[in-house]
Length: 451
Ligand SMILES: Nc1ncnc2c1ncn2[C@@H]1O[C@H](COP(=O)(O)OP(=O)(O)OP(=O)(O)O)[C@@H](O)[C@H]1O
Ligand SMILES: [Mg+2]
Image 1 (tube, helix red, strand yellow):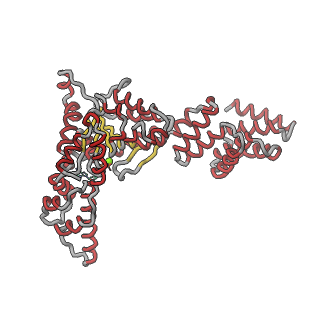
Image 2: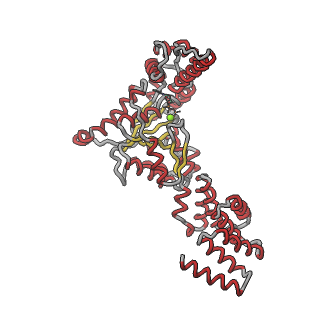
């Protein structure tokens, strides 16, 4: 600070001899911005601008001073003027990045930051770079809501809150085959690593779950983490691609690193199909780098992946890049079908488990009436039945009657089964693009349940 003060002293003295000297006014503004004396800085830039109204760098200085002083809307106005000019200085985009980052518009902030360093590599600024790299984390608790975090500490703190699901396989109805696959490939190798190693079998690789929406993929990922008393880190891939333009690889690595520090940990990649090289979001984000980074993280070239368990899910496996299917990566690709009758009965039982005020219910009967319903559809049925019951009780002077079989069958009529559309689409891929028997499980399923 001392040198700043000395310099400023000298400059102010010089200004006394040469008042209204434009370069001096400008310099004083710059030094004051460095000293975080933003309000004063702005008055020197202003003075310069009254003499040279078209000076872009003074406008930029003023914009920075406004930003520093928290006068955001004035900063925006100047920024727009600068950008509209024919040749704005590259630093203009740094200001833009800062303003966007303040508003937590991290994607815009990144665009701006990269525009700046592309025009002038010397502008690279580690701190600003951190600021613009918001990390998107998908919340599983709040129905897929996405939260963006800008600082590493926040990421850790946020994950702390959400990552220990306390549900187990008991809360997952049906899905026997999927549970078994997860047990064989993920849970047992983790629990008995020594035995596995003594026979030269290494754990590793992940499972990719695919199937119609609402049939329990996300649900079982949480339960897997719960089964191991471990953590779950859910990662929304669309958000990675959207948000981390140019920096996706670095941040993907960061997420793997956080997971490695929190083992046992299930790293759950939702919407994995976004990692298809022919996908438009992939093209937009510019490259195969992110796919390659993902693959090398999976292979654990530079790091230990012990106790790091990897699950991914998608509704559109046909978009997924082929490279993911090689051994050691997502070499198990498991179809999660719509729940069959027994599974539906089990799901009803789970969903109604903690309602005390209910009749003896026949879950099998409900299951019979809900062919083609997904788990999420069944949840809607139960939610509607509860809501209708509450309305009825409230309208009936609070006379409490137990939730009945009839309440539930009435609710069933209000929900449309949602799995058919997906199955029709999948059938096309299974019939016409079934390379390496990838979709044999779908074909098997369709034989028994034609659509
Ligand atoms: N097998 C199941 N057992 C118990 N509940 C289930 C099951 N399948 C689905 N559900 C219920 O339905 C909800 C939606 O399921 P989930 O989010 O896991 O579906 P998904 O397969 O991940 O769907 P999407 O492909 O749309 O992401 C769950 O939160 C859960 O309440
Ligand atoms: Mg899901």
